[in-house]
Length: 186
Image 1 (cartoon, rainbow, N blue to C red):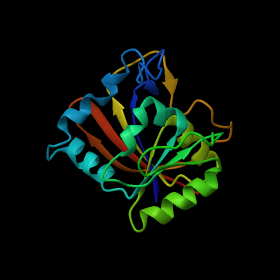
Image 2: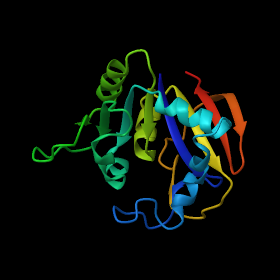
Image 3: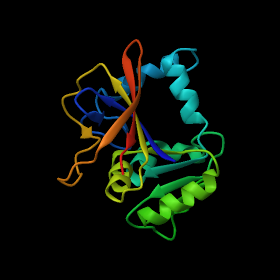
Image 4: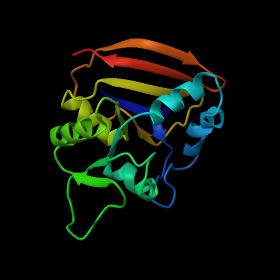
């Protein structure tokens, strides 16, 4: 399965305003990751974190990849990384297990094949929207943080006007975040 794992503010932002390579989460955006302080716990945040780390491949958008410092070539445990991009510069060789892919369906197919019987983790608003538009995203794990950022980049800003039906399969409240898991109804 292809599963989006994203932290977001209650008002739907995944980064604060003025995000850039130098300030990858924008102003105030790193607040969205405070729940990771509990990633080693036996509580809900620890459970969700371990679940994400058990995935067998990663799909990310090019913007997310660049803003994350290309994860220094390794997102977690050396899993293959498939970076969805509009253009590939022949002189730009991604580090580690990362590879650039321009077609969303091809990207999803390659990631699923690489992940084997494990899930594919998705990061990035652009990648999530592309996969949703193509009908290739199976589930969403949203870490909704108890904060209003007010501005920044929204997770679902550029979707078409038709709706996408979701079925909630899990809700795990924690100290300053609620982990919501949805299945995309196809």
